Image 1 (cartoon, rainbow, N blue to C red):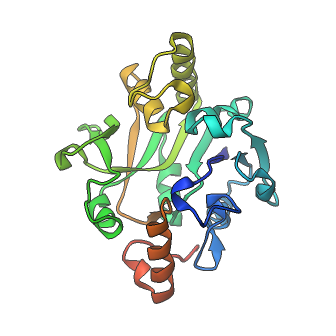
Image 2: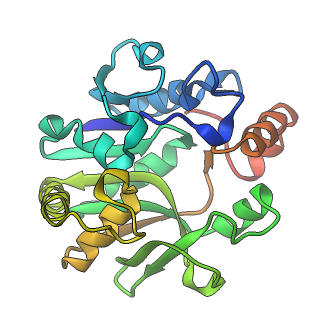
Amino acid sequence: MKAIILAAGRGSRLKPYTKESPKCLTELGGMTLIERQLQTLRNQGIDDIIIITGYKSDQLKLPETRQIHNTSWANTNMVESLFCAEAEFGKDIIVCYSDIIYEPNVLSSLLMSTEDISVVVDRKWRAYWEYRFDNPLCDAESLKINSTGHITDIGAPTEDINSIEAQYIGLMRFQKKGISAIKNARSNFHKQLRPWMTQHPIKKAYMTDLLMEVILMGYHVKAVPIENGWLEVDTVSDYETLARDFKTGKIINFFNPNLN
C-alpha cells in the first residue's frame, strides 16, 4: 500500500499565508499540516508516500517521500494531479488532500475497509461547519448514503440541508478494482471532452466529480463514517480560528491532536 498526497495547488483562499509557501506547510500546533499527515500515515505502517507537487514544489522535498511534479498545476485540479502518479498506483492506494489533518482512528477506519473504493465521510459535519462558517450550507456539498452504506450522490452544490447526510473530507482508498474504475472514468471523459458532474472540464475536475462518475458507471463507493476527528485549512478564517483554538485547547471539541 502507498499513499498519494495531492499538494499541487496554490491555496489562493489562504493568502497571504501561502504567498511564500504551499498551503500544506501551514503550521498548526507546532507541526505543519503535511508533517502531521506524514506522521499519521507512518504510524500505521504506510511508508511509501508520494507527494504530488506544483506551486513552490522545491519546498516539498521532504525526507523519506517521493515527489511527482504536476507541470500543469496552475491549470489543472485534483483529478489530473492524482493521475500524474498513475504509473505508481499499483493495487492499493490511499489518496489524501494536503490541506487536511485527521486523527489516527480516522485512518484506521479507512484501512479496515475491504471495499474497492472507500471514502471517509463525516456524519457530524454540521457542528464543524457551524464552527467554520456563519451559514452551515456555505461550502457544503451533497452526499447521500443508501441502506448498504454506499454513496449514491456526492459533490453537488446544494441549499438543501437534507441532501447532506455526511461531508466528504478528502481522504479515500482505492483497491485493485477501484483503481480500474477511476482509470476507466477518466479515460472516457478525456475521449468525450465534455464537462463532468459540476460542469468542470476534465482538467479542472474535482475528486468528487470522479467519484460521482464511477457511481453512475455502476461501481460501489463505500462510505467510511466518522464523527469529527479531522480539520481542513482552506481559508484565512480557517487558519486563524484553528491556530487560536490549538493554543487555547478548544480544538479538542473537534480534533484530538494526540498522534498516538
